[in-house]
Amino acid sequence: MKQSLFTVILLIVAVGISSIIFFFFLPEFITRGGPVVILLITVTIMLVAYIVERILTLNKARGKAPIPNFYRSFIIAVKDGKYDEAMKICEKQRGSAAAVLKAGLETYQRGLRMNMSGDKRLAETQRSIEEARLLEVPFLERNLFALSTIASVSTMLGLLGTTIGMIRAFAAMAHQGAPDAIQLATGISEALINTAGGLFAAIVGIVSYNIFVNLVDSFNYSVDEGAFMFMEIIKEKEAQ
Image (cartoon, rainbow, N blue to C red; front, side):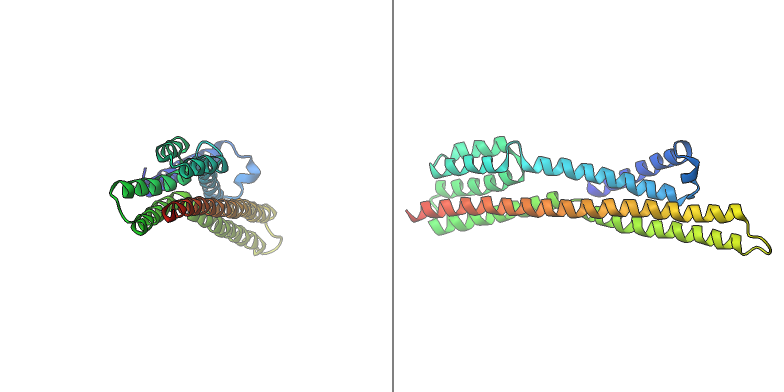
């Protein structure tokens, strides 16, 4: 499914679910926050969906076995010249790291079959690794921008709800004589509820964004480390 289509479908579903929650399941003191609460619930649902998607995606990118164990098995097979076995290890592992190393190994084996010069084999192998890595990076970083955007939008929505509530509160105080106590309390409640909702979504969005950015950076470093070890081994083999 294309990313834009996924986002549109998620937005439509989130609006529907948030409307149902607002009108049928929320206590009265929260519904006093007004229609902005529906928008805050919508972005919160989207936030949860993106967090779940990121967790599943990163788990899939790691592959089946722990990455250090995978690297150990792969490097031993390459050192022993068992390239077919190393290829099977990558196919069994799956994930982004395995895809990058598999691309490099396939190119290196093709260079051996075509009797390329050592320098050309190494250059082609390095190029394949870089290309495979560039293909994996968008997969790892997908929806991170959405998380940061939701965190920013949540803050603005909370501020919007706060402003609307304060307008109502001051309008109630503007009456001649005694202020309308009910309207005053309703306006203040609306302001505070939207403030709390906006801050909650923003905090969750910012924290989850930073966590996933760190995880992606660590994973990219791990992939680079595995590719570096692989290149060093085949360089040693070419030098023999």
